[in-house]
Amino acid sequence: MATRNLVINDPVGIHARPAAMFAQAVTASGQTVTIAKEGGNAVPAGSILSIMGLGIKQGDTVVINVEGDNAEAVATMIAEGGIYIEDYSDIEEQVEQIAHVDLIEQELLDKPRDTVIIHMYLEPGASPVETLALIAARMEAAGIPYTSETEGVEQEDWQNGWRKYYHPLEIGKRLAVVPSWQEYDTDRVKLVLDPGLAFGTGGHETTSLCMEALDERVQGGERVLDIGTGSGILAIAALKLGAASAEGVDIDPVAVRTAGENAALNGVQDKLTVLVGDLSDKASGTYDIITANIVANAILSLAPAVPGLMAEGATFIASGIIDSRKDEVIAGLEKPGLAVVEVKEKRGWECIVCKKA
Image 1 (cartoon, rainbow, N blue to C red):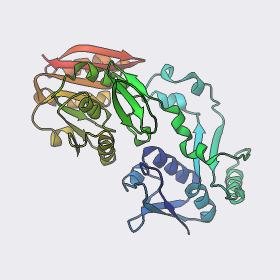
Image 2: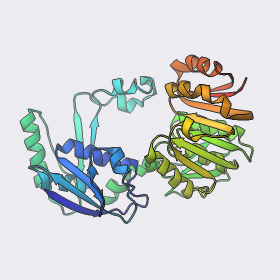
Image 3: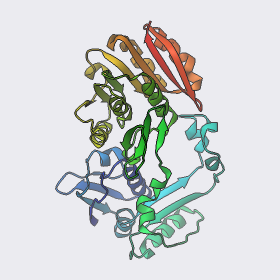
Image 4: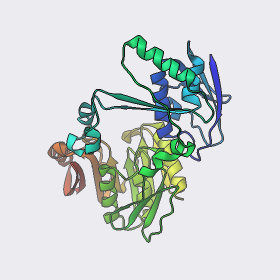
């Protein structure tokens, strides 16, 4: 068995992006790997939710244990460096689960379907010999033709290179979503997020459509309910636009913790209550604005409960709906007594705004 103790230096700890990359590396290794906070219980390191459930923060020490014939090489590969895999063989099939193929960047569609590229990063000074030997043995045993090459990479490129893809976004007439590491001079209402915190950054059409609807409707003093809150971006946006209070509900405890962290980052933690559970368990009273940026099936399921949660003159904003299901969702919302007042569309996604009929 090989063991590595690592101190987490990232200001936001191990959030969704590095957790996913680490779990992917563990799965690719084929070894038994566990991760634990120092002094805590170990969890399977191939599970993103298990890793995030540890709540690892900046300054925490984590203990990684690897068991197997190649434990030392694997420990070096996954704990002292990093890995990511490019595999586009089934991109069309994957896309159909969430969107239309024509919503995907052409650059991705042009990627080869018969080649998998594995990128691995090692700490400065680490020898790649053992890792390359492990890869060679695995590939040859499986009868997979392969080539390999090595090159130097600046440490900054590996740790922070992904950040270059995130830039401030101006949404609607009043909002700006700004990555936490960037300065952005604007008169707009700034919502500060670290995209690595996951589940909503404003960049996807479903989220930006909801934020546009909030931008148009929050006047100040509202009570807001955000169903499936994820990163909390919608509830936080409403609060920064002037809402008096907000409640976020999500079945995922990891998402709930992330929403709380984002609220603190924006100085609205005292106005946002984030709860683990489903709508029937957690929501109470009535709300002036209700948002649900989830999926069509979930919206149809919760629709009967929504009118009873709406105050006089309240608005329900539903998003995450692919255009091919728009009519079905509208019918499902009208059945319990909601009236559609606006349908927003962006690149094949629909946002449906309702009042009580």
